[in-house]
Amino acid sequence: MKQADLNLDLSNRRTRKRAFLDEMERVVPWKDFVALITPHAPLKATGRKPFAAEAMLRIHFLQQWFGLSDVAMEEALYDIPLYREFAGLGGMSRLPDRVSILRFRHLLEQHKLAEQFLQTVNTQLGAKGYLLKEGTAVDATLIAAPSSTKNRDGKRDPEMHQTKKGNEWHFGMKCHIGVDADSGLVHTVVGTSANVHDVTQARALLRGEETQVFGDAGYQGADKREEMHDVKARWHIAMRPGKRRALNKGSEVGRLLDECERLKASIRAKVEHPFRVIKRQFGHVKVRYRGLMKNTQQLHTLFALSNLWMTRHRILKGVV
Image (tube, rainbow, N blue to C red):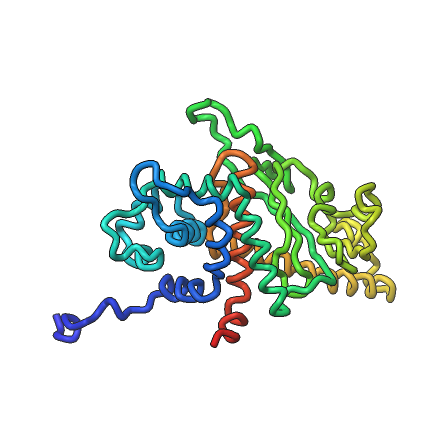
């Protein structure tokens, strides 16, 4: 073995995971999030001294970024020094176990703090001019849930349902989001069972200040629904695929209609970016818990973090 190899200092190696955590360390508004948690944190210990709220929050975010269960997170804290360093637990004589991690997550769910995380992030991004209010794009995606009945209850999750998409059946939940049509940042999240039609949640995805709304063909007729009577925005809904294929694209009218559909699609495409971040960057392709409430709360956290991830370069440029 070469002498250079013997003298190699592995601690100086900057891996992609370390680079990612360094960026998130700088863009996540830790103080604001901790301020939301502190009023609800336990005032006294029932046994061992509780861990600091910020340390538990950092562990919770590590779970979201790397797709770790409570048990896997407990083991990762012992196995991976980088995680302990990020959570500020490097010099601790004990580390949070799976029960502590579970209780912290229940605290967030009980007080719906994940929704407040998303609101806090968007308020700050809006103040910086990254989040506008003139337009909204709406869409939904399916998130799979275990369909097996080989569990303690011998039943599937009763709050999850199956639906047919194309020629395939899917079992799980549906995540509906409203995003800023300019930046593609998520401002509203709704979780339902998979068999709920997209158009029924369209009103819940609007902020009320939009002048333009964009959606795919699944939102046909949204503007005519009873709950939309107070919405003054102009709707731009995609033409159904069959009707678009029937266009006489050789004619001037057909060519103009096809170009109009392309323009609408280019704006709607921004709603796919947050889905890509949580599914590909964060690895969230299956529900982690039973019940819609817990999984919807997790989605709020994931999209708050995805908004920060998508704007991290712009935020870091403004950090002195």
